[in-house]
Image 1: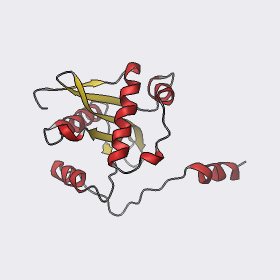
Image 2: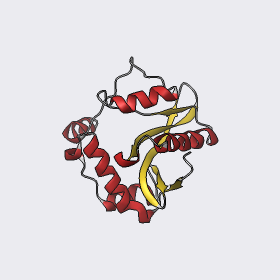
Image 3: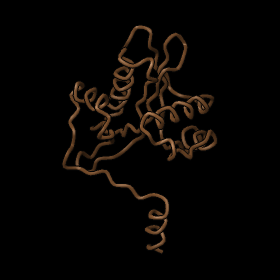
Length: 163
């Protein structure tokens, strides 16, 4: 970890900061129009009675410069839990200083400590800096797998078809 970088768990008080960082990630990924999240939803789903995910914040000189957001998965083949890394983001002015690596190492350490068999994530196919970064860490790309999503009206239609 870079000497000046500190990684800490996010708290309920960090919800506005996380919303800001998520917005910055959405801008970078050209997906801002998909963000419907607000502080209340973050507080409910990250810090409420039954948290759906966790987040950590990277700071340098006491200032937030990045975050990672992740949640538990389970592999039936391994018979062990895993972690899905939903977001890994470092503000552009702080990239190439080891902060992204420190965040990923932190989540990997949590995975090992929790007995996880996998740490997985996805990356946009055009994001060559991220893809190069992951390759440099030794991550394997899984070309035989395709990510699928049901959302919005398609999700509602499938849910209704079972009733």
